[in-house]
Length: 265
Image (cartoon, rainbow, N blue to C red):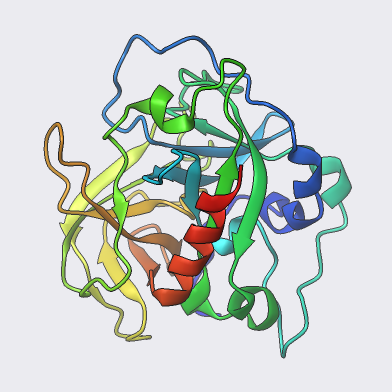
């Protein structure tokens, strides 16, 4: 694998063993009163811990979240699945908290959404292929039967782009680890993406502040004002420093994962 995976601790790698425990209804609050600039972006959580960034991506049922593959499944090698971390059974149930912020346990203005299915490319789970380091998650409706997109804002989630050119103006949003971000506020950067010199199949940006914890951050092109949520072209997967970040661009196989996630109930 190339670069530094920007996920906190071993929790992400352990969750493949615990996803089956997540078949419960979301406990989101009644409709949020405040529209947040990055309300579709949040953190993956289990037992009060967060370690990776994730984001809502538009889907027919409004129930799909995108993140990095290494946040929810260990990398494989030579065709063999990666080893799940020893503390995997202690991690708990995987959830998504959009709009998360605040010290410690923080606040969850749009609720905590339970993950019911995880879809990861076997190029990652069997071979650790960086170009397949993405995942799509399905979340359950909340206790009122509402979808994730209904609560975070209809028409506010970006649409996935399966064949993006590398050179795009992108807005990238992520949550650095608490050591560098004690208030758990999202950092963002709008800049130009390009091919990564070290691996031309990957995308690259240069933006400071993307420390460990920002794995899974959405890369959104064509983002504008209200009614222009943009196109999701990939998610942050690595980088040698907090300034250098890479993403695996979505491709046809990513689309199959997304469609599988979108088809789950």
